[in-house]
Length: 208
Image (cartoon, rainbow, N blue to C red; front, side, top):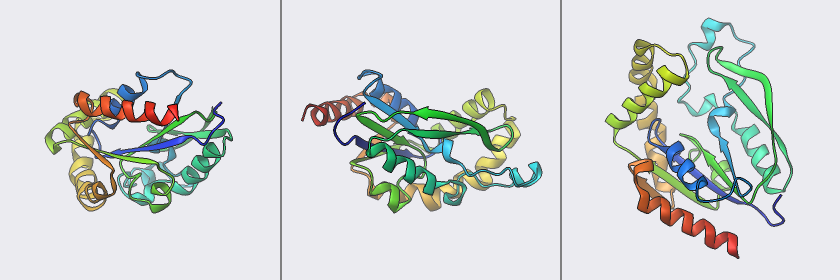
């Protein structure tokens, strides 16, 4: 457990931009005891009070889909060196799972998600803000692969969601948050130079 205030790094960008690849690449440069990753996707709002059909109508790319109040509270606890119980989201049932993950604070906290730079309360807690900027054609291909393989979605459902919610929400809410970033990384995890620079900066902060 850290003895000083943890460093909080926000990694934002559109769905399929390569945020997770960037985060994993940074994590590989440090020990497991140094970096903690908090995914905004885990903080989708609980929808257990809704019917399954109603849950299917949720726009998961809109800021209101996230329980940012809980995420902010958890980040503040981690910064104060307190453990949290991170929620788990069930993508097949489209609601929060009854399971939680016990999480201890670490020296570096990476907060990853499409809309983490959209909420001023989250931005205020970040020491470094990163935006992963990737062309739309690559993002949709990556999203198709992920949702079909990892989340049990059909091709038609992924394409329909992209056209009717992902793309318009990206243009309305995600793209504009780029201006809040301290660092913009083009092409996500393939940009090894930018990731090396990020890792160097984190190492410098940790050495102080």
